[in-house]
Image (tube, rainbow, N blue to C red; front, top):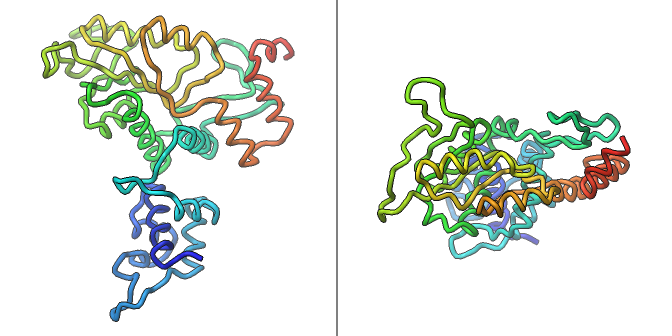
Length: 308
């Protein structure tokens, strides 16, 4: 049995996880905007007031959450800063599920997608789509900032650089959360004016008198070949670039790790096709035949192609 405080804590966390205040969640659920306000949680004489089962049901419904999700929010352990403890696995699976629910990743084994290369694939990823989903975008970028704080020593990063074009909005979102200045990098110099390839202000030196340390941000990575254009442009401009962040990493091409090693870049990614497949299986999002075909592709992309 949950206590009065735990139930309200769960509602607060549900609202926050979707990017809403308690009153915003109430409004979204079609309730009086003050229904979930802290002032309404006790009567004037101090007796506890509980949310009704109807209001809780509506809140879960409009956020696409289940009772199991709600219980997990209630039971989540808090760290010393008052935030829920995260693990890289949780971040990866939560991010994968967001990609599935927003239809930013698609599975279709019966009618495979034709990629830019002309090859066929039973999976497709479109990270640009994510920028239109406010709550989901917020959750992903919060996860991204958390991941970078864990693994990239963000105190030593001076600027964030978004790669043209899909990396620009994500660069802005991450720069905002890390409270860092931002620039963006073109694939090639602009053909007029200052002929700039880097837009924004990239200082010659940081506050320590050293080359500015820049975090490169893009939307996704397949084999990492395109990263060299942005990394080299930044380095040629005098920056130190050792870390890159992407929302999604294919995670199925050995060339990706090789390219990053050759560039001297540590890649940080929220999730990969493997976590998407795991989340899809757990959530029952696709039929068994589709999941089997996708798994075969991920284990052997070239072999899967040969059978098409």
